[in-house]
Image 1 (spheres, rainbow, N blue to C red):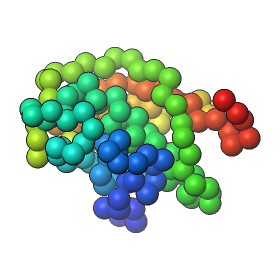
Image 2: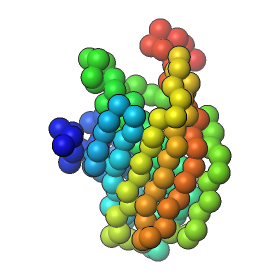
Image 3: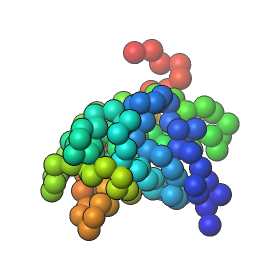
Length: 145
């Protein structure tokens, strides 16, 4: 069993509320992260119907950030800002995640070298799976932007 299971994900990602879209860690390994989010009114972008599914890319990106933050902590470093470079193959089968519902987000590392990475991501929601490939970049600490 994973020792991080059930911990607050915000401890591992460099975001502050209300721009946090990951509640809890479900599972973390050296290759992937699984997180969950309960849809609630105080989330940024929430509407009466719930959270728009176009926010899926941010849910996925924050799960990648969670993965990176945990990996950094393992070597004694603090979580740092990364950049979403783009996404491919994102299809949204419904317009909203309903209020009070839970979504499960998984980000699996496909490639990671010198700060550049690609993650296969998916969101499980009410029998649907939303998939996308995310390309990300995390600059070295000594680099300036």
